[in-house]
Amino acid sequence: SKEQMMEIRKQNCMTMKITYYKKPVFIHQGYMQWLWDVDGKRYLDLFAGVATVSVGHCHPKVTAATQRQLKKLWHTTNIYIHPELHEYCDKLASYLPDPLKVIYLTNSGSEANELAMLMARLHTGNFDIITFRGSYHGGSQQTMGLTAKSSCKFPIATSSGCIHTMCPDVFRGPWGGSYCRDSPVQTIRECSCAQGTHTHAPLKTVVSDPPGVCIANKHYIEQLEETFATSAPSQIAAFFGEPIQGMGGAVQYPKNYLKEAYKLVRQTGGICIADEVQTGFGRTGSHFWGFQGHDVIPDMVTMAKGIGNGFPVGAVVTTPEIAVSFVKASHFNTFGGNPLACAVASSVLDTIREDSTQQNSLHVGTYLMTQMAKLRDKYEVIGDVRGKGLQIGMEMVKDKGSREPLPPEAMSEILEDVKDTGVLIGKGGVHGQTFRIQPPMCITREDVDFFLAVFNKAIS
Ligand code: PMP
View 1 (cartoon, rainbow, N blue to C red):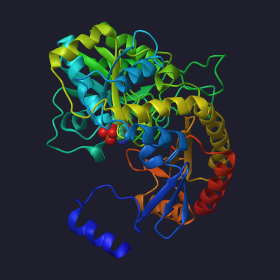
View 2 (view 1 turned 180 degrees about the vertical axis):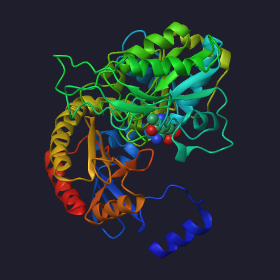
View 3 (view 1 turned 60 degrees about the vertical axis):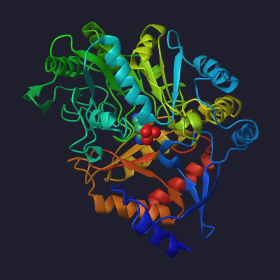
């Protein structure tokens, strides 16, 4: 019974700091974009676990592939050569641009990022790793240190060598919220950043961009240069960035920012790492990988979540040159690349292609963004709607003028209301002020209409 489960949770399960709902949800079954609780109530799952289920809960094709492999071989380690591992690496490599072709499989995003940190340090001989404020890269000791999202930090996690630079968030960034999408032609504006009050040069608008796209200006890059200066010369091992910040609240960077940042990092001798744990596997719609939306090619890519549609898989992909450092790391894991995980991940890749999942992410995501923008214009408390494909954030504010975050109690009330009406959504952001939509990528426009009606009612 539910009472028994709650009792066991109290007695035998470690208490988690993260809580979502006042009234707990007892999930019992899932199919595609739907979940059912133990009472048979159906929920539209717009958060996919935590942005994990990519092609759909218990997707029939993935389930069938898993069942076939279950009867053949569950486990052996990567010290043996087995067809599933090699077929999968060959297939995954075909989705990545040159020279990103060398793969090591892990069981989670944290493990992948931990290994990426180690390899970057071994490859460059440097120690410092730069990442954005508000970022999330994992829950292991090193990746917790790398993570800058304050609610996920823990004082004794080692952050030695981890430097957190300003996040160039175009809505709530350090430059006075130079939000460019509202007003395509930028005027000179004041901001108060770490160095005091500045006057911005007007941001450029480029004819080929849709009106209002925020373009990285000198100011953003100077900030990064200042961050580099806090590290000893030539001490940068790597720069880590999520192409769209996930836990940070679907935070987007201005156009060309990553491109400029990658140039600078490479000048220092560091390598560029894209954390694709949330943005990979077609989630952003327009591209298979989030980094492609920034017109860059990283030196290393880490991935997890969507790669296995909920099955624990992760990966580090890098260039042949950097991959040499893996031997120096003498790294080994027991479960990474096991036959079952490879069979699941392989059928996920096939399903993304056969079901046109990425294209659906683009079409349904664009529809959702357009409709949400209408709600943003209608309600004072919706400060920003942003994202790409099916990685969307709605930043909630007290009012549009002040952009003060909507208080946690109000956020909870909305979340609870939406859940009671049958929709599960996520939450993120430095102040927990951003609702997040990252559903299984099989959702339809009808699902979006249902959600919009539910959300509209909850907000009003
Ligand atoms: N990187 C990013 C961008 C993430 O969102 C997460 C998980 N939320 C991780 C890394 C860590 O992945 P895992 O929980 O699988 O260890």
